[in-house]
Image (tube, rainbow, N blue to C red):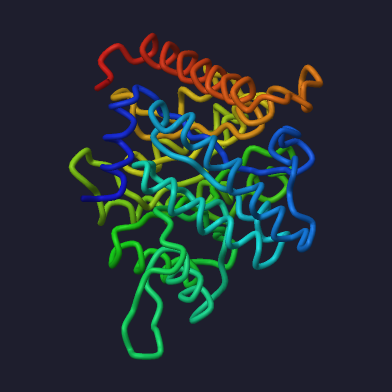
Length: 318
């Protein structure tokens, strides 16, 4: 099975093309997760808090979302202890049937790019000559700005291991246009040029729904550009940041989808994990209260996006 087929199956089952970002910010995690932690090794204590927090989030949303997206920066900052929490989070999410998108924005050239690809998506060689998965993510975000030779190793590993990538094409941040909107000699923006490369490789690797795991990051904050990019990349799945906290609305994400209601996965991290901080409720003493807020926020997002899609695309498949 193409990994996108699993993503789509999960989306149809939950009627929800959204993903919860697992961005564990210690300063925002409710205090009820941080009580009675041993201080012998403060980094180990943080790792334990992060994993327990993530595990509860996964348990809370696994029946209503198709995927989760851990942003690796929140784990790497704590060194090996944070990476341990990341690895356990990936494993637990997959046990619960979720697709895991590692938001790491990796890349380089040659063997270095291959090493990133093998470590996050493929298999690594061991001392006895055997090869085993390492992080074993389903998808990885990848930056394209070193050119095609830096992307090909990721494409190759995806083909060999039934994994996927989301190439940064048009990001949601306000300064993205400083580079991504620059016109090339072909009369295309940099984003559109990258989209052509993504589309070329996407055509060679599609699943039973007609979509490819060679996908693109396309922000909700630029809907007109998203519409142009969708025409260039009809078979690629889009990972769509910028919804909610960054200002993107349910209407803004519509151009990222195809008329079948598929083709995109909309991310929300802060809007789901930390809605409690809007009302200065960070000191909630009950995990049950906090997790209910998380679930309510995830359901609200699902309802808003599903209603917008079904109104715009009445013949969508779910």
